Image (cartoon, rainbow, N blue to C red):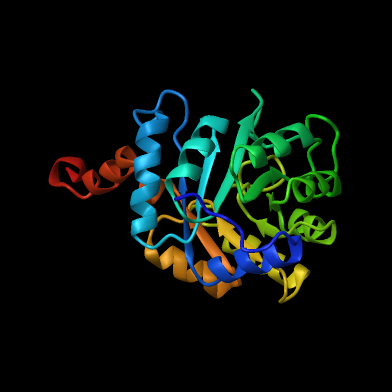
Length: 244
């Protein structure tokens, strides 16, 4: 069931991915260390389920790293947006050329990499990360925290830009719910042709609709779909026991 690009040309591969995801909802399938679902086998089944539900791609990896990417990439027939999460102080996403290459070789069609204004672990630039991804025959999605970072990543050649890290670095405060202002400002700075993904704290269908209204080309949702503990707490909050 592994996804295979129809072309060997990067521009054609970019067009293929953009066509697959535009105007759609992508699901992120991840679980951190210590979570009840921190199991590659379980996450692979969840990935298959969200694809059955219509997700045109799957974002995965994180602290499960290459093992999750390899397993999910062979279990689904849609593009995998792969990443690693590294570092003990703050979250850094695929923050080196070596990490980008490893994620690509694990089966990702799109490598999600840290393109904030923080220094990457090997001192690499966005252009370095893009070049490494393209040399591996895959695309590079820039995970950013601010509109300015998004615009800079786009100018540096990132194929796709996402607001993944908005509210997760010192450069932008977290919002309650998705950071729609980050999406709209990034769209304004990048222009209409950029592929911009809204991600981070999209917790219900209204949030998804608002993300598209703000200018997103696609939206990624994770926790609200794939974390049963979070979903249970959300429903439990409406019970008499919780309200009294």
